[in-house]
Image (tube, rainbow, N blue to C red; front, side, top):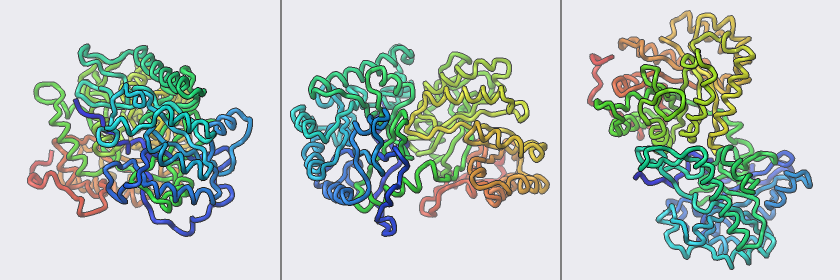
Length: 595
């Protein structure tokens, strides 16, 4: 069985040890809006944490934390308690300006020996997430290096002492869900709180009822243990790894836990948000780095950044070996080549080449192979590349009512997807009617309900670039942007001079905010010669010249990968260092092999 990694970079905005910029040393009276807050997530606090490359990347040196608390006490940031969050949510009393939540996960002993004395000294409130199974020594630890000693956890007596101070809130961090569970037949382990368990002996997945009962019972048990041991009303759950979906958040509410905390890249929370995102602290940031990063979160958070996305489109048929079965060696080869090319976005066709079968269990179409979850998890965990499911609308032309349950099945089996793109056949007028837009909105809502809140989920549309685009774009594009976060235009061949002129006229005048939500990709199936590949490269470079930075290429596979690497590495690769350049085809670059 493949061990679940506690590395949660795909779910978090990482705070690193950065130099302080003096211009940001002081905070204005009101950095955040009314009833907004930022939440920070700490783990272990030790006196011997190395400045760099400590074995526990989640630990922070106690001197660094003390220095940050000292700065915080003189700043215009205001640490707030869980009760203050609840009161503001219920409209009783607004949060103070620049509210900040200090949270510490896992119930480690250092929370009592290192953190609690600092809280008393500075009179700061904080929230502690307790894995009751770890405290009671009834659950195994998921980290054999950091948490391998049961004596490294707080006792109930120590927590009772902390509770009496009036500075400490305790939240459920689950009882037995801070671990990875079997998520597919290939052996990947994924976060227990959002994963339908694969029952290997029965060769099936948990039913919805089994999944929901498991999550409910675990949360309820954790809450009851905390309440019995500490004599408090527990109102919050801190989700392990930040892994929570709206589905599991609703289960938590039924279990009596109305407040949920996850992880997230934006870090800024509105008081009525169903889930509060926290900024994960890694690599022992010092006080100055934390000060700077607080303002980085405000000024350069995920919601305000314009990210450049370079993509490939892949069919999972490439992972099927000669035996007709899924082949893990082919997946390994694919991952090595994707890593060498260094794109940051992958579209995966959920249908096979016949367009009749799909690669995940569902109630609408026959399944070819159960391979999508394995591919998605491996790409994200090994390469830190976002994976998007590509779904052709043509497959639902005669049964549009089946799209929503199909999306539901897809997301239940693939909660770590970064988004879904619906692919149209090109008739924009037909898909931009009010009825279709309502339909798409419903599909989007369904997809988001089963997606991991700690990730930014994108709902997009892919359409072929048609000759009538110029005349319809002014009317169609704003409508599409109201319902889709991204629109991907597909070129069936490299642009000629006339088409390049049209692209410049139509897209060159668009504002940057709109361009950042548009991408172009070239379908490589029609590239037959070296000159074709070079023309494709030129087209992508020309698009960048128009300010379209989101570019990609379709139909990537193990057979034509060498031509992607030879002709499209520039401009697709986001590798910015020649020291990191890797050519997995260096012995195979033969132009006579052009497919």
